[in-house]
Length: 202
Ligand SMILES: C[S@@+](CC[C@H](N)C(=O)[O-])C[C@H]1O[C@@H](n2cnc3c(N)ncnc32)[C@H](O)[C@@H]1O
Image (cartoon, rainbow, N blue to C red; front, side):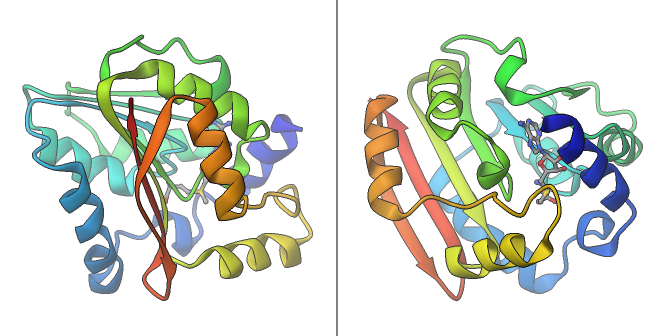
């Protein structure tokens, strides 16, 4: 299944939704991500499903050269585009691979940022356990999308492709899954500004 998904995202790596730098509206929506994350300079950020590196570039600037960004994506095309975008940024580690089998630091990450990727992870419970294990004590997990849950799920459902079944779980289910992964939800909104969940490792 992941091979089909990687092929699908490969076919999208030049599409403007994936490749264009964020515009003012998208940048405005990212403000609350950085507000919730707090100061990130010198910190370690994990970004699964980094796509073409649009957010990775912003994260690289935000953590600075004393920080570290660890980003990966299953799609070779996306990673190639991200590497181009992040050329010369030695504090950014960009790899092709699946979050679920990636060698991650244990208790080493300050912020795990799942931007527009969580519904694509086939085993949300397992993925949350992996993300939680990578986080430092009191480290943060943020799961966010530019659109609300209903719109995201609808786009995937109607796409009729490898992502057609990729749904963001309902809030109650996310609460249950987070709690099972030792993560306490500290902020949750799902409205016209998009989907936003922030959780802290207990
Ligand atoms: C909708 S795109 C979002 C890309 C990027 N985060 C952005 O917002 O521009 C989702 C990305 O997640 C990647 N992806 C899907 N499942 C993944 C997994 N299990 N591990 C790592 N990356 C994955 C896809 O290849 C795709 O590039």
